[in-house]
Image (cartoon, rainbow, N blue to C red; front, side, top):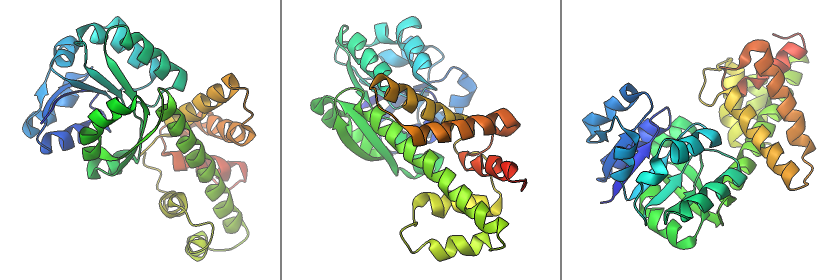
Length: 290
């Protein structure tokens, strides 16, 4: 059993905290809106009204906050970093820029606090089932220390030094965002030409086009089911982070740039709260198929 603190009990954080409780860990939680954390009391978690008290209770502190600036604010402006004892391991599972992760690691190291960036893929379904893909950057010893906790949440892989986990997550989001665009465009082409998109999806599923995106997001497109699992705005944020990172590395990413513009157009046209498979709506609109 480990003493864990989890910061952020939103759509991902709540089921992940619940799994950690069910695994027998002592779990402390904090959320900016405390009412969102209250359901975890029934699972045995201790809900803290104060951030610093929650952080001080954990030997491993897990962040599931919104973005890099929010993580930085919680750590260095709201007192979380100062409340961590030397030797505490901070595991940042938010999706932020690699440069931000490296900066946070360096600033925490000055306080004797260890750091892993460990973003996830798999959405709320993976969070509930404990099947998340977890990409970790940092020291190998810190990854080994966190592994018993991460294994409760999914399949964890150590991919390199600080920032590498975030780089792997950006790669994941590039592939997801680009593939959603490819599937949407292809199904719409077939529909406009008179083929049944549901049957086309079935027909090509056994060939080289088969993918998790074609299977899950393709089905959402066929059904016109764009209830948000991961929102268009989140996908757009991730693609923009990927482009910012690529620019800093003097790396050209024209395919990602093209998809970033399509997602931006969809958001601008009112699709911000749709699932990221809702890029289909923007492409349909462009082709007079709305």
